[in-house]
Structures are given as structure tokens and as C-alpha cells.
Length: 240
Image (cartoon, rainbow, N blue to C red):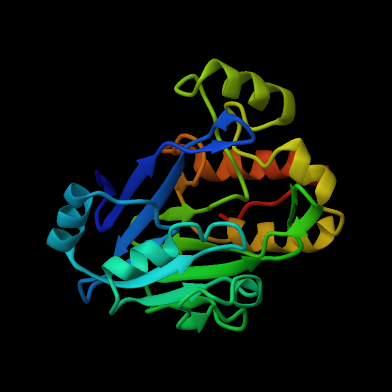
């Protein structure tokens, strides 16, 4: 079911396990002034959610925001075949079978003058084969002042299982908006990541929605900055 977060922005969530941990996952929907809807990191949807979607606007853009969040895009595209599938750079090579309409350009920084974005450069994650680039596009919805992340930060709290809480306490992301120790060890070019973080901090956001964890509704910029100061091992400046 959709949950309205602010004017013209909704989320929907579903259970998801990763490495045996209950981490959940979340998609974000933004309605443009045209009535068109952008769906970031789609999940599996039931008929009730589809009916809600159809009631709020026209699903026009489906976004796979990084090289790992693509599991449900094909099934979502099948429900909305007229919607364009936009993907993070590199996904067209990794998953060439996806019905891709556009690779998101790193030379642009806004969508339809309402949503800004940037490629989070040099950030890596560990998978079963070792460290790999995430190539995540992060988004800023201007009207609701919302930063939308996928896997570049987590925020687990007591609403998650005890096992997930324990893991987050050990490796990072428990009641703190940050990547985990795994990403910290995997990412070597931290100067490039710092440049991306500084660009994010220049956005005037008050809220953070991430794919895994509880949404940050207050003091979000400070929490994001502090999480990345830990990750980078250096102090950061925040735009006024």
C-alpha cells in the first residue's frame, strides 16, 4: 500500500532479506506538476497498490537507481508498458536483457525542473565476488525538500528484528544515517565520494528516504553529514 509522505511524494514497502537479515525495501513515488509519476526503485506491487497508483497519476518513468536495485523493474514495466525505464549508468551492460529506454546521463543534474539528481561517484559495496561500484543516482525532490537514497545509507532502529538491530550495531547503520563498515572497507577512492557528498549537502533537504531503514523526518541534513563524516574519516561542511 502507498503511504503519503508529503505533498506529491509517496512510498511503498515490502519485506526483504539480505544475507539472512530482515532489511526490508522501499520504493518512492514522485508526482510531477504534469501528473506524471516517477517511480524510484520499484518493488512488487499488489492490485490494491496498483489501484492507488492509478488514482494519483500516470506512471510515466520507472527508475533503477543503481547496479543492484533492478529486481522488480521488469515486472513493474510489464504492468506499465508505456512508462519509460531509466537506469543508472552501467546497468545496461550488467543486465542487457532489461527493457531499458534511457541510461541516466551523468552530465545532467535535473529531471523536469522538479527533481535534481547526481551520480554518487566511486562508492563501492561488497557482494559475493568482492567490492564493486554501486553507481547510484541519488535524488532531491525540491518541493518536499526530500533526499532519496537507495543503498548509499541505511537507518535501522527498534522497528526491525533483533537480529537486524544487532548486525547494524556491529557494522553500522543502527540509529545512524550512514553506510556500513562493509561499504567503508570496500570504498577506496573516498576523495571522490566526498565530492559527491558535498554536492548532496548543497541541496536544501529536511527529510531522507532510503531503501533500507526508517525514514528520517527531522534534522536530516545533520544526520547525513555526521554519518558520512564517520564514513570518510573527515569533517564536512554543510550549505546554509
